[in-house]
Amino acid sequence: MANTDSDKVECRTPTQGRKGTTQIPRWKYECIQRAILEALEEAETGYIYFKHLNAAVEEALTTNQLAKLGSLGWHVTTVKLNMEVEGEIVRVEGAKPQRLMKARL
Image 1 (tube, rainbow, N blue to C red):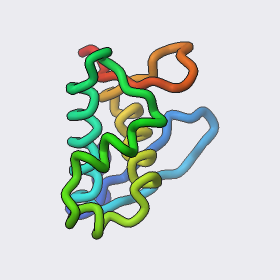
Image 2 (image 1 turned 120 degrees about the vertical axis):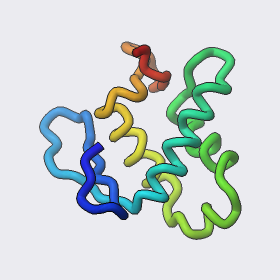
Image 3 (image 1 turned 45 degrees about the vertical axis):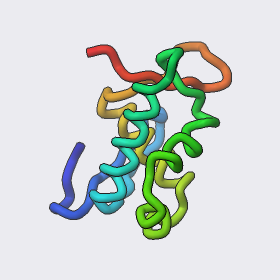
Image 4 (image 1 turned 30 degrees about the horizontal axis):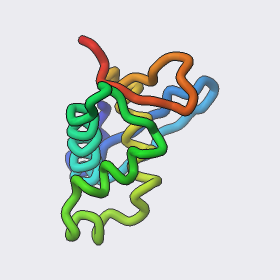
């Protein structure tokens, strides 16, 4: 994860042909990242459907965090994409609808 400064995280996308980055405050990135990893750890199947990810993250965040976050869906998607680039999570290949799981290291 590239840092632009100590307060921001530079997020990338794994999508071919998409250039550029998005910067979000570090605290937002880290609380959503923790919530995504927690949701994946708690998933009995080992994966979570992308369409259920927002609800899982929302459950893991405090009311205060949610109030300060802004658009939950936008932030979850941005962090999820960067986590794919960083190799923390992967899409289940060929699965439709999209499913996510922790990367095997």
